[in-house]
Length: 415
Image (cartoon, rainbow, N blue to C red):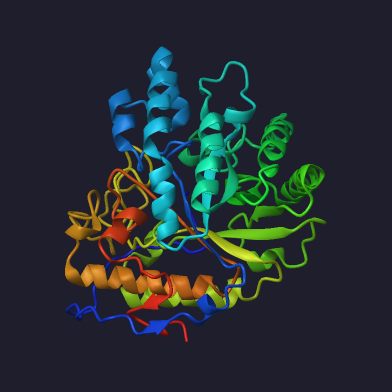
């Protein structure tokens, strides 16, 4: 998780909160039952991120800013500490609750180092045993699994969620070949789970603005699709739109069942720091109409959230502030709200004002309607240590995420 097709941030209420109405309208797409994906990511589990589990990084010291440096800082204790996390963060009960919420899929990020470790790197292994367990949990609860290669050798985007913060060195040296090696381990192992693993996401968020070249990326997509077709024909090959927008991939043919994955966040750019909830809603609806509906390939929004600020602690990286309150180096002083992150950086959505809760639900509902113009969506993320607007479990518990999923308190926002 990091950037999306749109960037921006704001949580500005429009007047007083209105009373919460009994849902009386349902999304028309829900009645179709035609294979719409409604899922949630298991972020921060098998690939760690500081903002999802800040306590693990803080306990390791200031140098721990990604899983690479976390593993270095933990040293000989790295495997023990991460194993404790892997074995406690998710369990069968989580999968049962995800299913009970009406969801169909879980997308599970995993790093290359779990499947094909590189000698001399500090990463530790053991994640694939947990992914095996997750397959069993999903089968038991009736969920599908999207296995997602979230980090590639050298880093395909330079984000901490790739395992290593810094320059995007993927495509340099033999990193692409090493990525193929990891996929040659992952794909045969998990595509054999018929009825559970029906899609493989072959690379998360490659970032051209960080130097990733698009034409070689397309060649990599073809090579990875070949591995999928050889292992189990008919498995969905999920490709990232590389922040270009899904319609930019119209006509791209992998010779396989291709699904385009686009990510939509409105919190990572000061240009829209002053957006109010109406502007956030409009941006989501416009994205559905101008990008998702215009894609010739089946398209999912594989990451999105209900946050309208970047206030969450460590969201922009450890030791980084927020654009919303002006504490981030990329802030716009003219639009920043000094002190504006108070009460929004940690904890539960329950701590938000009633107006903010209403606006958050409005924004979520608009995105649900917009994103179901395609193949569906996968929320980021199921569980955090306290990230309001991101934690689906918390939003469900507080009545902010619609239940059932097709219920609407603010119908017709994208019409």
